[in-house]
Image (cartoon, rainbow, N blue to C red; front, side, top):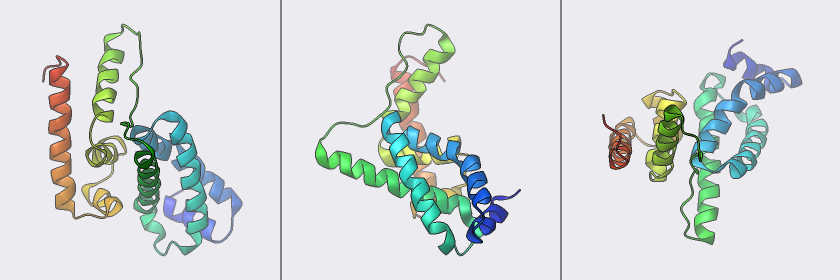
Amino acid sequence: MTDELLVVRCQLGEREAVTELVRAWHAPVWRYVRRMLDAQRADDVTQEIWLAVIRGLPRLAEPGRFTPWLFTIARRAVADRLREEYGRDETVLGEEPPAGDAISGLVDRAELIAGLSGLPALEREVLVLFYLEDLSIEDCAEICAVPPGTIKSRLHRARRLLRDHLEEKGFQR
């Protein structure tokens, strides 16, 4: 069943459709939020996102544009949380890499995650949306409310920053 049909069913008041929609999109939304925040805050923010989605579904004019609409809500929720946190203190928000496992694949992944979490929020966000959530340049632009060219330049800068970080840690291209 397509997301568009699920959204229309939700708009018609079918509770089962809401359950299916949340089941289908909970993991991708949580992964996006988790890559932008730590695990505890990701759980809280994800709940806030789903509350906003359920409240906003009746007003969604284009059910076929559900994915960009959903990630726009997620982006705003993450930005609000980051603004809240940055307002309280100046600590850098990010993900702690897994500790103590000698398996090289896990170490490489931990370095990649650490590198990703060390990027500025705008660059980290565009990498997560484009590569990890597999959204198009156009969808990323809509979610971030910027032109596609800005997304392309952010992607370029983010890849360069991530590459530089990984090279500093001794990883080769």
